[in-house]
Length: 126
Image (cartoon, rainbow, N blue to C red; front, side, top):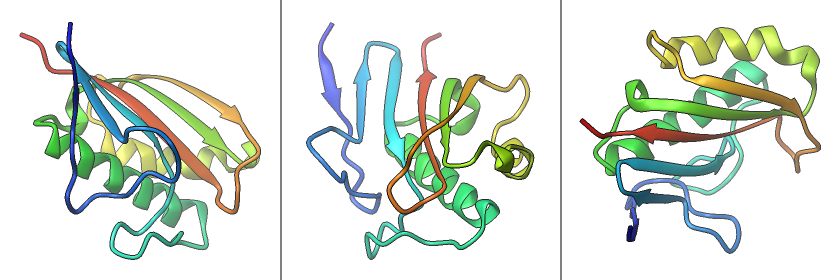
């Protein structure tokens, strides 16, 4: 199965040596997204709610470029800088993912200057 790079002209830019999004067969893999403004590349949001919203908007933009939506997401991995922020991030996260929500893993991680990073896998098969 061939891998296809998904380009996102107005999306967030990778911060390292990785692809922001790949399609492999019926699956779309979106690399971990932080709360960056795609236009400036700077981190935005002072609260976990603001940062979660920006991360989810970045993921939504990337998925749309790949021909998918948040409803197609089957798996999410979330990294929080502080697990005490869980309930607050979870409230915003729930606004973006319709039922049935994707399976999810949330872990505490040391992040570089921001509070949240999320990567997702979407399924777009029949």
